[in-house]
Structure formats: C-alpha cells, structure tokens
Length: 313
Image (cartoon, rainbow, N blue to C red; front, side, top):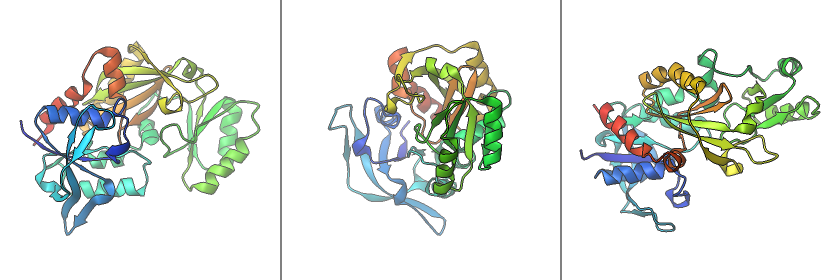
C-alpha cells in the first residue's frame, strides 16, 4: 500500500530520536513506502473550505544529529493526502482546539489520527470523568471553599492545572502543608480554568504506569517510577522507566474505556494508572512507544499503522 502521510507536529529538529513516538511512527511509515510530509500546526490553513498546509517532504533516519531531511517547501492540499497524523504536543489550548476544527473539514475522507472532533472532546484530565469506578476521588472546581472541604475530607491531596501536561504545575499537598491557599491564588490569578484536585494515591511511589492502547485494546505498558523526593513520575523530570506487566485491575480499566476509544476513532491512546486508579487518558499526542518497545521486544508503531490501514476509507 502506497500512502501519502502528512505529519502535523512540533519542530522535528529538536526531538529526542530515542524517545519520540512520532519519530518511530515516521520511520515505520517510511519503511512501508509511504510518502511523508512535515508541517507545523501554525502552517495549517483553511481557505473557503479548502484545507492546506505549508509542508515539506520528509525523510527520517535513526542517526543522532542527522535524523531527518526536508525537500523543497510546497503547499499541500490535505484533501488529497491519505492520512494526517495530528502529533503536536499540548498544551491543549485554543490553538490546539482550532486545529481540530480545521482538520474536521478533511476527516474522514482524509483519515486524521486521532479523530479531531473526539480529540477536542477528550482533554486528558476531563475525559476520564466520563467513566465510572476508575478514578481516585476527584474534584474539579475553582471554588476555594469546595477545595478546602475536599482537603478536610481526604487530607493528603494532589492539585494540578486542568489543561496542563508533562507534570507541569502538579503539587502534592500534605495534611500539614500551609501553601494550599497561596497555590490556589496563583492558579486562579494566571488562569480562568478550574483546578483538578485528587486524593493522593501513595502507590505513586511504586510507579505511574503508562499503558498504550491501539484501537481500544491494551498493547503494552511501562512503569515510570518517580525520583526520590519527587511526586511526579514523568521521565523528563527524572522518572525511571521499568519493565512491567498489566495487573487484573489495569486490564479491567482498559476493557472499561477501550470500546469508547475505538468507537471514537482514537487509534493511539496512552493512559496513566497509579495503583488501582486511572488518572489520565492521553489522546492528543501520546508517548511511550519506544520505551515499551525496548522493554517488551515489540514494534508498537507497526501495530498502529496496521490499525490505521484498516480504518482507511
């Protein structure tokens, strides 16, 4: 199968080729003989119903410092390509939301992965709230009195921005911590969005498990163990990846959410599980492929492209 694939992502110059999931998706596409184009979200244009991107033909190679090459820039009509990979990183802001609206004009005739309307309707921390019995006790509000009451009930809590990513702005507030009021004031002074408050799950010290789902089915996982003195397990803040297997509870969580992901055109998702609780469903630009591949001896990007091919019109 020969496909034309446009990849909407951040600058490819600065990616970590040993950790970036988009990079291995591009490598696998190239291996299959697909033609690749690279463009930035800001180079996406909607003009009288026609969606184009100022893009460049792309070739990739696993060679540090020389991992890509561009052809001459051209205006690519995205109605005429087969697949668009929407892979720019969050934040999930109005620019991100606008890109999903624009890409709706080409989907599904041009297959956008993941489905732009359902990406827009599934912000990581809010999407989880639509599933019963999977989350730790959770509050979403900007009301200080509600937050104080939640803390009085649960004592040990986590607070985080509702549209944050990568562990930024995540705070562990212990029962004796006097900084809650100041932190809430800081959050509300810099943003109009509500805040997510959750009961602290001590099992985070054992790790925050990233599970990859392809078409709604669990395909692999890694455990990310936080560094000493750190409540966050994100690898860019010092989390250590470890080989892992799915527990019965984690498999149950995947079975609860998987059918909805598949029905909504979420081909590639990454969920975060701490202990027995699901904390996030990542559908915007999930990561973790290379880490799972290394620990489990699999090639998840190949499975993702197989799933994409089956969805082509």
